[in-house]
Image (cartoon, rainbow, N blue to C red; front, side, top):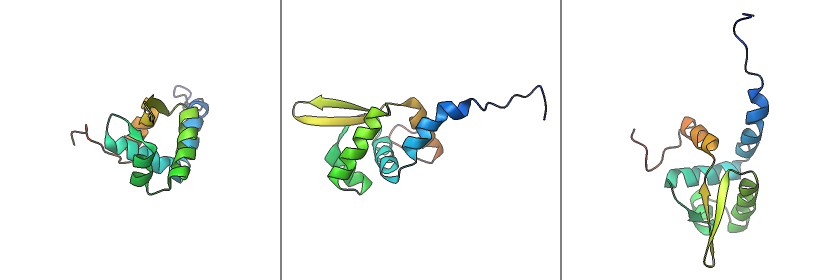
Length: 105
């Protein structure tokens, strides 16, 4: 082991919550759906359809994502809209191959 090269093992504690959020297939589908839509917001119904899950399933997953700070929930009149706001998760989705509207590939 090279003493001049320290391993950033402390990053495990920083990144573990993010990977826990991404570890659930439903949450990951919803995040990819939000990411693909590009900047902006979507309703539970729109996200459920895009992710191929039922609305109650999407709603429960979105509550978890909001509580984790990955997604922001905004009430617009009688509608609730969600958007991906965590930059760390956004960057990871790019690395997973998740492209979206503002990509210039």
